[in-house]
Amino acid sequence: MLSRCISPFVLLLAAASASATAAPLPASRTGEAAVREAGDGLPCFTIAEREEQSGGAPDFDSVTVYDASARPRTRMWTMSMPPTRTFPVMFSMCIPYGGRVQSLPQTKAATLVAGKVYEVVIDVRGSQGRASSATTAFNRPRGYHARFCLARQRDGAMLVRHIGTLAQEGRNVYGCIAPR
Image (cartoon, one colour):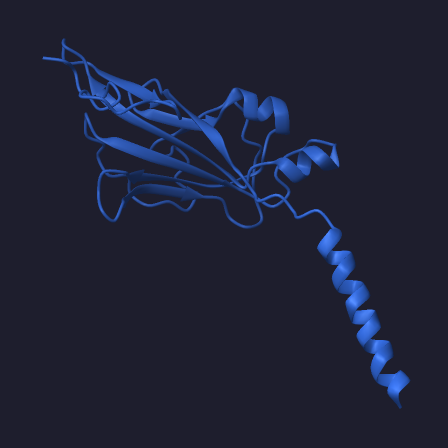
């Protein structure tokens, strides 16, 4: 009788010690998105070139733009892919703000204002790219993030400005507000 009780206990201890010595799984990371100016003066979004070089082109799921200055942050626009369709997000392409493919599920794009800081989040699907290495696949981001603004120039023209991850806010809010 005593051996029946001890045997499962010993197995449980062995399993616990084996799992305690195993290396913990690294947390998923958020990759860097890139923000560029589309031909119409509005922003467009993709992944950073170094993200594609290191992890391949991830499969697109959705893109969402937020007003980062609002509390709670306000959704300005979102577009997603139907569950049965996707495409690889490559640095060479760019998803325009407000979308151009009206058949894709999306919200109406709110007007972006000069001098405000916005955030873009690109979510990707589980397969997350076409890299062949298991190590590379394990380290791929679960999504991509960037900040940007529309900066009004002295001549009144608008410029899309990508705000780098290490940028300091300063008096002109990351260069988003033109100096007087």
